[in-house]
Length: 233
Image (tube, rainbow, N blue to C red; front, side):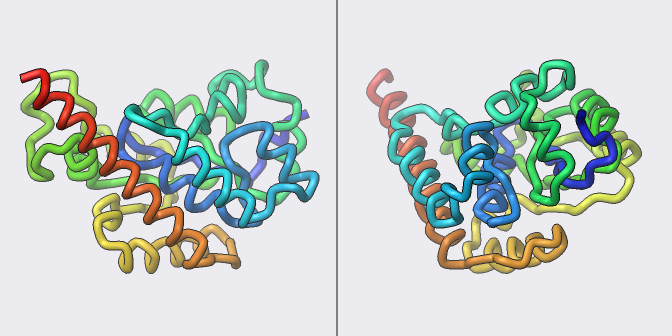
């Protein structure tokens, strides 16, 4: 039976394309966190997925990513099966909800936050801010481009949405996505976030290797898409 009072769930709130999966995978490198795939959970519980193994898995998935971003085939559906309906959770979720290792759930909207918090009322929460610049950068457009000027574009939560989310989650940790643009700053803030989540094994060499590979891959995809667009013109 699921532990409804579990404090091992971390709800990460951010709009689509806002860079939250990268943050989750950086945290997932800890020995006290699970990556977002039920098979990874099984392997880690069998002591066959240590932090070095996790890094190798992430690097392999990055290498397999060619011209389109696919979240490294890690995510809420791969972990929970149906993240918003506990009736369809994998049975292993029930078990790890009684344990101390952290596992992650994404919320892309106010509605997602409401549903997630209703299922996991004692979860930890992380709220990302300043996501627009990162969204623009990964698409190869100026970082200061006003995404609100184009209807339908994924964009940062409005002030009203942010306040709604804050009212729902109460206490939360904040992550500034602009930190991604400065590796040294990003590593410093990740170390603080590890500590705030009670994680004691931040490894800058491990996380930094993933950071470099991730940023290189995003640049590679961005350049491919830009060249494809230029060729089409």
